[in-house]
Image 1 (cartoon, rainbow over the protein chains, first blue to last red):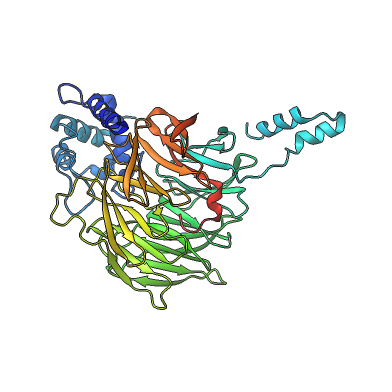
Image 2: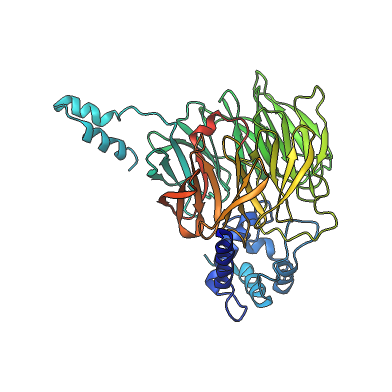
Length: 104
Length: 397
């Protein structure tokens, strides 16, 4: 019984992250990148088990390519596909902001 | 601020007059450290010093740098904590005086560390520039630097670094797919034994409490690399191989961890990578005993200190939940949701209570383990790892 409560809470959490239009609020995206992408790329995004996501490290990749990497992952590496959790607009927004220097 | 807690307590306790009371101000009341510990506040570069019998935070120590993914080991006397930060910082803290004793920035990007069985050497595993650096535990001066250049010629990140008896450390090379043992013997010059071709992308490793079985989880293939360190000639064997075979690999949004793992009397309960399952490895036969369906991608599978239960947390987006596996039946017997982003759990040394960090609620919950009820909440800023000083007397991480 506690489990169904847990499942409900998880669904509610997801619903709160992904808004009604399927697009995530900017604040939640910033938190997701810092906290969840940060578990491999570091809270400051300077890299960890995953590579650095600082602007200098991404200079040779355009935002469209980065957006696709976010959505589809990189096979043969631990980078997972975020499609399903993030919309293409979310991924593109993250990609563009990573290139600029990601907000805190 | 840090001496002040003790100073205040000293004053309150002081019923003596004049000079004796002034002596009290300088000399905090005697106390042990066995019920102390640290909570890492990852975003603010600080730690809270906690006391587990009163279930309180005694104070905060700031200035530890980037603590995302920070971990901690303790000196044998349980007075000093060594904090390994993501910015390569190695910080030695005094738990009694609640202050930084020493701090060095030893690499660009580090991931964890270990302390030798004699308490004299602290080893740090590095992502950038890779390799392992070893420091004198007293002074934090560098004793050795061991680059991790794999057989493929590339510098490798190192992971899964733990201590072995006899001033030895064992760790895995993430990029090279190797496991190395650095033996410091009597001297400061390590003798390194290398095991090659252990498998693709070992992401973490740990050793059983008898220092017999070292396992590295493989991310590049589904399985674990195993070394039997009691063998006269240890060799790599793959265990739990192919647990994803014939099934869809579910995207892994956070790497599982083997630190503080699910060691019970006969089995190891391990996180699958890419399945919502805990895998049970029989330590007698080194064969898979069972796959236990669980709520999400397991991150930590932590055995209660008596080994009767294993408690699990999960990766994004199922990370609000904790589940409990009953060891005799190998079934999930309880699930509950402490709150958003449960990052870590740490049992008190004999397992009567467990401390659970709930990052996005800025809170650590203390639970009564047998009743499975919350008995206290500790406010903390984005708490991640929780490390109790009793770890000082535990082999491995």
